[in-house]
Amino acid sequence: MRAGTRHRHSRAMALHPGLLPPPATTAPVRRPTARGQAARRAPGGGRGGRRAARLLVSAALATGIVAVALPRVAGARWDDIAHALASVSLAQLVLLGFVWLAGLWVHTPALTAALPGLSHRRALLLNLTGSFVSNLLPLGGAAGTVANWRMARSWGFASPAFARWALVTNLFDTALKLALPGVALLWLAAAGLGTGGTVGTAAYVGLGLLTAVVLGAWLVARDDRAVTWAGRCADRVGARFLVLRPPPEGYAARAAAFRRDSAALVAAGWGRMAAGKLAYAFLQAALLWLSLRVLGSWVSPAVVLAAFAVERILSMVVITPGATGVVEVGMTGVLAALGVDPTAAAAGVLLYRAFTFGMEIPVGGLSMLAWSVRGRGRLEAPTLG
Image 1 (cartoon, one colour):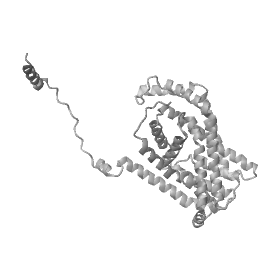
Image 2 (cartoon, rainbow, N blue to C red; image 1 turned 120 degrees about the horizontal axis):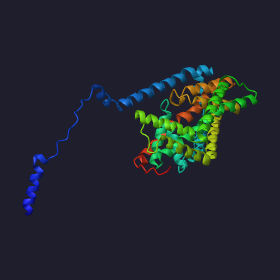
Image 3 (cartoon, rainbow, N blue to C red; image 1 turned 60 degrees about the horizontal axis):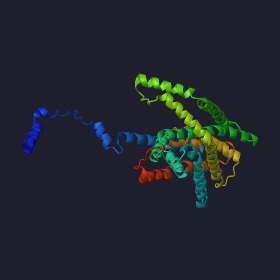
Image 4 (cartoon, rainbow, N blue to C red; image 1 turned 120 degrees about the vertical axis):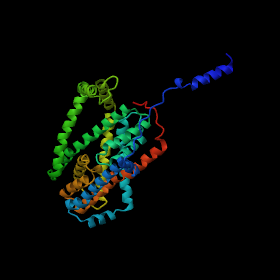
């Protein structure tokens, strides 16, 4: 057959209706509803609008608690509190800022020990950006963890390694928060100061919760039985209800491997983790003492530790972003009850929280923006961990 005839035959076959594939079916076009159109027109969409509304409501609640309850608990007027805050000089603010930044930096060894391969600079970035997100939302710790996970993934860390990092660092942090009220109560008793009221309540609550945390950690750390049992339950739930997609090896085997890797991580780096957490807590307590000192009030270190310990416990009550309002009122009440001048107590707590809560928002936000601009689009292969 000649080339021309062969080409004409091929074109005929290609154009024959019986040889053409059936036309692809398409789903019917759904008309957008009025609610959907309104959500798309709204800034950030419907979900973003709801998040913004929750943020505004929680911020208003926190502001209301501070505005109404703080002066009543302290027994001071807002005019006097504002006058005390206005007396702080620029040099004193720089000193407070230096102590705040030093606390963040000494905390980085605890973070790098929990995630081998993480640099101190990136650990500081994780700390700042996680706090930035957490301080914007009630119950914002989960959102901050997700933000940290995305950053860690962009640096090449695998999800299991990050999960171990989040678990171990939060476990150390929680244990320290729960232990501090008991230490403060003993110090107050040794100094001959009052040991009842809020500090005593916080100490007893912290002791009970710390006992539960230690017992749970011991049950998990001793062997694979507890996590294997939990993994098998997850496997059965996934098989029956098809709500969980189990890994090829099953949740039981994966949980056991995760426990062993976490135990090895703690065994290798517990010293740096504990030292970093303790140094961070010490410098934050020093920041509280300095905040009171620059206002002209000399406060016993035992009293400062008592207020700081109550703040650590109350920071877990995240009904508002960063537990704002609850923390300020609780700390001021402890300081005033232990003999600190009411105006200095309220102003000192606000100055302290301006750094430990307020400054973390713009600094953490700018840090996240810089990370997004420089390297968010360059997702590395998750080879570490």
